[in-house]
Image (cartoon, rainbow over the protein chains, first blue to last red):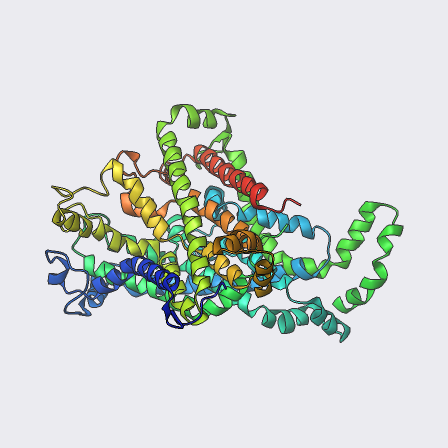
Length: 291
Length: 320
């Protein structure tokens, strides 16, 4: 049937379909991962290997010098590299934790309560799914300046909190949880707030870890807010600072340090995905847009 | 407080019918459900301030001349007239974005579905490895990966691609991949395709894993013989909701190309070869501070995204 049996050899015959399938999947996997492997390899290359001709893919004598350089280069400038890491970490953690609670709080009544305008609010969310936040950049910039939030952490946290995708995923997941459980709690006299924290939140765990992952990736990787809402060097985040370290096309002096910084930026997202992947897939099964 | 509302809920469910006017009934309904609105409030307030109002403001500003220092001045449609008739660079950007979207949109979407389907064919224990391999590029920071791309496509003979092509004798002298007008856009497309196994891919993967087994058994009884028949008549209809979600995400992503272009080709790119609608918007909004004109660009982009998605809804959505 659809799922192949574990081994590629059925009885005495070789299952050629299976062999081709695995071969294709593996070749493609290598193609997809190669740039990342190259990044890892470059981050550990000593100077003489970086400019070796012919260029080599893998590192021969790995060294940690690039990571050291990264700290040295930036400690000489006005803002140490650790400051960018702190900014990125702080903004990401704040955005993720607030974003998760806000989406869960909004998803609960949209999924389980019958109040007026419920349908209208949800179709507005669907409409908002259809365009990228980038189109609202200009007025957002104006709002942030008017509110006097330029160069504050608020400016980089608050605009991204009400993301329609997160609310959508949480709501779709919540839809398939039976109402009976919540009704039982209501009969026992639990208040809505208690129901939300004690019953809904624990049941939402897979959806919430998905939101955590997606919101982590988007906040951690996005240089946008730092680019738009800050003018001061000390408020920059990792991805924004990164574009200045590697220095753009043709600047080779800091190639090693750039790769080291890039590697440090990429690793957290991958770790997050490895940790949460099972729950993410559980949530995504309900991610469809029905009707 | 909320206990009362819970208790009265059942008894009041009938009341709106007896209410004098519909409006009054609606109001009591709203008051009765106020707890639901409290839950919604934080999201809705932020959503209003940072999404709804900005969208409306962008529409409004697009009819004005606004440079931030002076108050906006109403100039009617002239931003749009300028945009579509006189701004050659915008037309280049529009063309680039469309070319980019036409290629990466469908190809990325098909690739995501195909790979997810192939992964769902192999035993559970091997799936995670391949999922990780395919998904990781999309979560690797685009800015960070520039380090690799700039080396791979470097214009001198030290560039990996040039080195191999020279060695194989396919080219005689190093090619300026990121400076040549002909290769900038294709490279942006390739890099974007590499990063395209995003949220849609995960949705497909999860959807495909959860197609009930008995549907295939029923299909076999009904005479489904080949695997592609199974795919077309059973699998695809079963994951249609996910397909729709993935398509919406793909359209947004395909029209939203910005950072890859800026990181690889610079801003502005040589002869605007990698210029997209978003880079144009960014140029006018945050470099020249012509907010009115930039808003018009944003409105055009907004209409493209929503229009295309509406079309996809009509096409993929339930027709019943």
